[in-house]
Length: 584
Image (cartoon, rainbow, N blue to C red):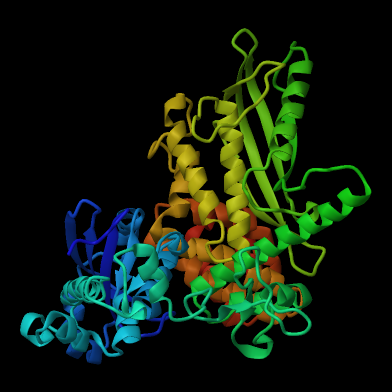
């Protein structure tokens, strides 16, 4: 039998260090990629889990620590796997309960937001259980007519993948319309139908912390859509708010979101919750606009993300009409502030405050050429306080472009052909991505990838600052380093420092400072050790030096102070005057 495919299907299996989605890691991944034309690709990969393999796992799988010591880590494999799986549906045995959730965790830990919702998930075990109700060995014997131990070595991902593929094909053959009479026993060779049949729960996230539930009216009657299908909403499936609508909980108790984001929940659960939160913010804004429209005139949804102030310093330029500089300043502010850079909905008070301080060092009027440097700064409010912290602050020494007085700036993400537009778009995406990372682990992934794509596409503009590996501090280096798998601890630092640290200090200064210490001792230290040539930790400590000194000066234990001091001094000795204050 040939699978009826409209796009590739990847049948895969994992071997892991254990069954904990948060703590355990992949040690082997095997897959068969079946193309619609019948071609098959097979690959079996051992993975360095970066943690010891328990003896009982080695006893079960035969995979030893020595065997994976020289293997690539999942972070190193993730970009290639993501690309291999990007166009495919996924299938496995018990995959919807374990393999897919763990694979999602590994991708998120590697800084890749692989969209599992965009593909069909087919579970041969779910089909088997609903039809015959047993395990893989029993399924193999039942459908293939042979003992699994006669054909395969047990508990090896590559062997289990082959067996799963054969079971799936045999299931489709056994339950085909040609061989079954009872309608409930018929299973068609259709990936949509198989994916629907494989569903055994109503989970929104893979861990089942949030589930879909039918919406009901005041009398308990199920509400339906125009097609008669039950309307669904997301509800919590644990804790004190079990059964409560997620959006309602986030509205009534904003601190519950913070607790989940800082607690030991899976990265996938935190990601899903953040998406629901962002969706609820958009829904509230839409409701407000609809309300105002009913009383006043139609008005657009306020979705712009940035609130930028542009300053043009032209003191070094003499004898030139000031109007061109005024036009540049006004054009840039309108372009940055009036444009919606993403599909996220920001309320006016949520817009990210940022500054573009541009110093013109040379102006060629004949060619409309500006030679400049720019100081780019972005701020972030601290939760439940009047304090504003610096999110980004760095000097771009190659902020060069062409501009004439009546130019109109237009941005096409697919075609990067204007240097000034590329500069502004790059920093817009970078600032928005950093801001989202500070509110959710890896929360800015999609936006930061757009920033990386822009930097790649700007290589042909023939302006300095874009060239790969040309300068360890240029625009390409900053976004490339930030998205590097080895720098994932630095991205996690953004969340732990701001959300778990500064935001927490408003209500509990001791706990917030302790969280910041932990973030520095783990994430900041590790990213510097893993990629010592990256300048990101140094740049970050440059603009955080005064804030860090204030956090620890006169506070905390001497051991804590010394630990933080040693790490910061090792990263950026030039700021030692600030670091010395930490020990006071």
